[in-house]
Image (cartoon, rainbow over all chains, first blue to last red; front, side, top):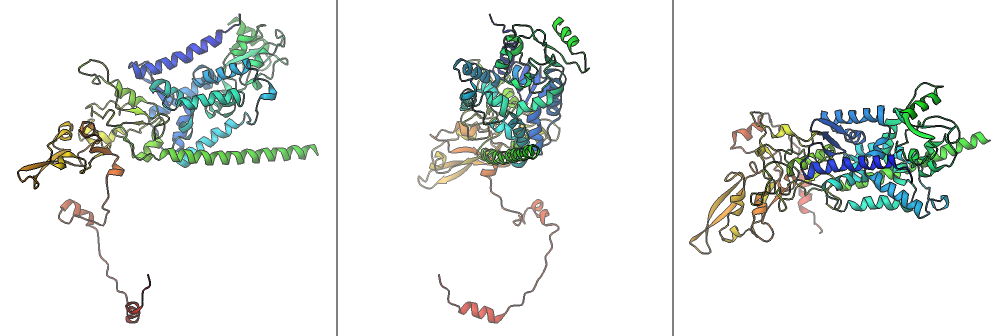
Length: 279
Length: 274
């Protein structure tokens, strides 16, 4: 039996959060209302998407204080604690692209010779900047015009309309086009969270001693360039592009990977790894 | 050699990235600009002017949630919750996706006294100060979501048939829409009861449009930009003391231009070819 602890935890979090958002509109619940743009916890604590906030600011509009405070809260949370966890633990599109990835492996589309690699992983950072530039030029939050993330979220809360086509398009693109095409190459929101979360505390840690080099982690990882230390040295995954999804931890049969707290002190890597295991 | 090669590659990939970014930026700007152009849309009360509103709205949907979940949104017959007025634009709607709007023939704005949709707006796209009266209280009568317009040719009141459905449906009864009596010359003994909309009072809630009895509404709400003309600053109501103030600082200047009689003569005597 494959270990799916973190996968189940993630799905529970993702679906649970979407259900709270849905209930806020459908039943008037007040636990988590709004959408990623801005939401409120129990009508009090504002949360706002940092990249959306930046886009609106780029248009030259002076946003209300709640949005700015909300964006700051979210930024601080992922900066200090979560890293790029939004992508794997909150974003509903993640479920779509994970499904595409899973089908891809089942259909043997995962092989390098049938994988179109016409986009670089760095494209998302160009798109991140471009989104702000276009927002300033056109006077409207540019990524929000096309974002499959908020289109899907609003779809779940308010009804999809033709917006469902965008979600299906992302699925097809990731399945038949570029592997991890959307989340790993194009999405500027993911890029923003990569930047925000690059110094965060929660990290996957690798133990070279325990590893048998089966490479299951690299197969399942949506950003497997961050696992460059596998078979090399016992260090933590420090790259901000790691979404902290924990799939590698789940699939590792040798207990060579585990979540831990980042250690900023050099030279005590193995100790901190042991601490992580105790935790 | 290897060094200059890697530098050349670096230059090439940089130029490529910049070029592709420029291409993407142009396509993206074009698309974003085209979806912005949706002039025939009615926004929630207090919405900023459309151009500013599109920049400001963060698409959180809190206004629509407040609208549908307000306490008063109960069907009096069934006791069940009704559909909300405000919808969030979906893919396929001809306007910027994720922004709130309403369609009076679906659900008009009921002009709630407490205006639940506006104070919840976190971004400022729905401008609460614009709806405050002199006592600093929220006043929905100050809303200007649009303006009701009557199409005389399809309005049966203008045919001489008695109908005052819009007049009765108007929440600002006898102020936003008044009835003007006119003699019906055709029958010689009846009156026309004509609905007249007053644009300084009408909030654009759309209850009249929903109430209209004709197959397609003969009275309908249009966004202010579309429904209203503009006389321009150079027309002044000289009989209106307040309007006359606008020309308080005006002054005239007399200029003289030498007229060449030769040119005038030439002009009058020149044959004109069409």
